[in-house]
Length: 160
Image (cartoon, rainbow, N blue to C red; front, side):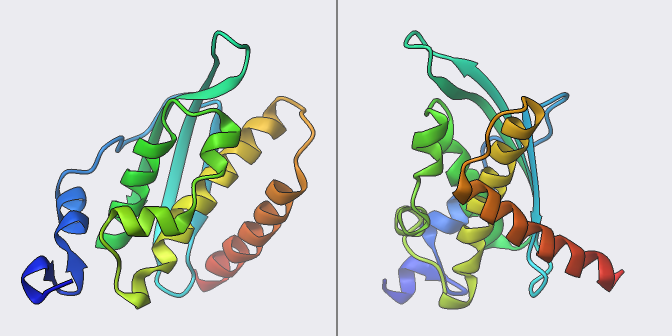
């Protein structure tokens, strides 16, 4: 990336997505809600899901919203993740690779790569919440992600 393609270490694509984010906001009575944060940088993210079934009977993300309280990278990565996940089955959405998000944004400064993890964690937490509300069996990967997020949430609460 050349100097003219970036500003303050951010690619033009990151800045473009940050200035014009998609799927921003809240959702009343979401099917799933994921609340996550990063204790080190202070970023907070809430992700809302509306789940429906497609013609094959598979559950998919019909609508997705995100509320991000954080830096340029957190807003850009969460916006892009919502665009990539919308219309996908739950399994396809959970398989979205954080590295793909960063690549599609034209890269991130190394110190900001953790923001792509935060958006992925928010999606996992929202799906976890969806399954929990419906009394469904929680896949092991989602259970482990939830336990990790709970430890972080406890750390954030202790800071207040």
